[in-house]
Amino acid sequence: MTYALIPGAGGSAWYWHRVAPLLPDAIAIDLPADDDSADLNTYADTVVDAVSAVTDPLILVGQSMGAFTAPMVALRVSTAAIVLVNPMVPTAGEAPGQWWAATGHARVVPEFDPVEDFFHDVPAAVREEAFRQGEPQQSDTPFGQPWPLDRWPDVTTRVIVGSDDRLFPLEFQRRVVRLRLGLEPEVMPGGHLLALSRPEELAERILSTERV
Image 1 (spheres, rainbow, N blue to C red):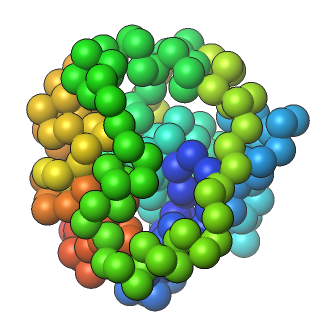
Image 2: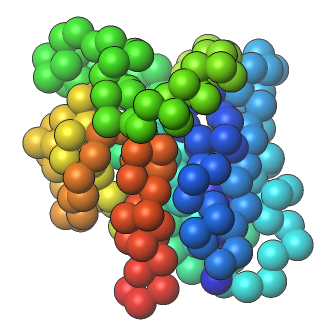
C-alpha cells in the first residue's frame, strides 16, 4: 500500500512528519494553502500530481479540511480506501466556509483558543517546533467554493476521531459522520492534532485499513 497524507487547513506536509516514517510507503503532501488563486480543484490537482507515479494500491488519508480533498482525488485516481482523521465531512454543494453553520458547530463550540485547544495534548517539544515554524497561512479562496461532488465516492471509507478533540467534540463528530456518511467513527484518545500528539496509535489505525 501507498499512503497519501493530506493535511488540513494550512496545507503543511509537516503535520504528518511523526506519522509518515511509521508507514511503509507514505507521501506527505504540501498543499498551496497560501495561494489565493488555489481552490479545492487545485488542492485535488496537487494530490493527483503527487501520487501520479504510484503503482501500489493507494490509501488517501485526509486530516480535518482534507476531507474535502480526499474524495475529489478518489474520483480521479484508483483508490483502495479513504481514511478521514478528525474530518470536516462535506456534503454536495457545500463550501468549506458554509460547513460550520450547516453542521451547527457554533452551538457546540462557541469559543475556541487556536493555541491551547489545538495543542493541549501535543508534547512540549513538538509544540515548540510547530511554533518555530510560524502559523501556516490559509487563503480564504477554497472556503468559498462549493464542494463539486454530488455524492461521496464508492470507496471504502473509515473515520478516526479523537475523544478529546476540542474543535470537533466527540458527540458532534458522531452526529455529523452518521448523518453524512452513514458510518460510526472509530474513537481513539487525543485531540484534534492526532498526528502530532499520538502518531504511533494513529499510524497503527491507518495501517489496519489494509485488513478492512
